[in-house]
Picture (spheres, rainbow, N blue to C red):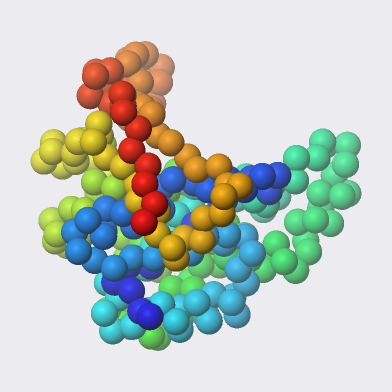
Amino acid sequence: MTYDIVIFTDVSSNREIQRGLGAYKIAHEARQLGFSAVVIDYSSAINFDRFKLIIDKTVGDNTIAVGFSNTWFPYRTFNQYHVTGALETGVTADAWDFENEYLNSDTHLNSLSMNFAQNKSKKYVDYIKSINANCDCIIGGAKSFEYLQSPEFDKVFVGYSENHFRDYLQGKHKDQRIVHYDMKSKLGDFDFNSSYVTYMDTDCIHSEEILTIEMSRGCIFNCKFCSYPHRNQKTKDFTKYKMYCTKS
């Protein structure tokens, strides 16, 4: 089956199974607007050949966008061994030889997550375009600032992007490559208190997994030395008093 929206992401740790929330929230928002969406997790276990098989099965003429959530990808701004998420070894600096061997194994060095961190993302975009030239390739997540100058991506979403993505699907910034505005949405109509995530069977959630619950967002303080864009928030607007988490 091909989807309107396809999103790749990674897990936050190799020590226990814990998914990041962002990609699933984006997919949920797309479905709320009537689009079909699928999340492909565990990017650190997806080499390029496997990526092509996934794209062949999920991308078609109807696909509007393929997105990549970089939150748990290794950092680009450091050397290739500065990693987070599933690629992180957790060993101490004294065990550098072990860490070096671990990160140079074929499984991890050739993964989607590691290739993106090493500025080797163009071949992924090129393959998507070979299937559907009109499909937008989008990058988002906590490390989006590292991808602002990567010309292969049609759009770069900076910050909390469920509002950005809803606006994108509704055609509100067609000519804007870098999409960056506050979490209340461009029109100020994003309701964090009532937002929630619906997981689908295609997410393959297992009973032993830990699902992320977003209880609050932003910071009530407004320190002058802080560059966090969502400071000075009113608590009642961005703190949930009732949790929403469903699976269908």
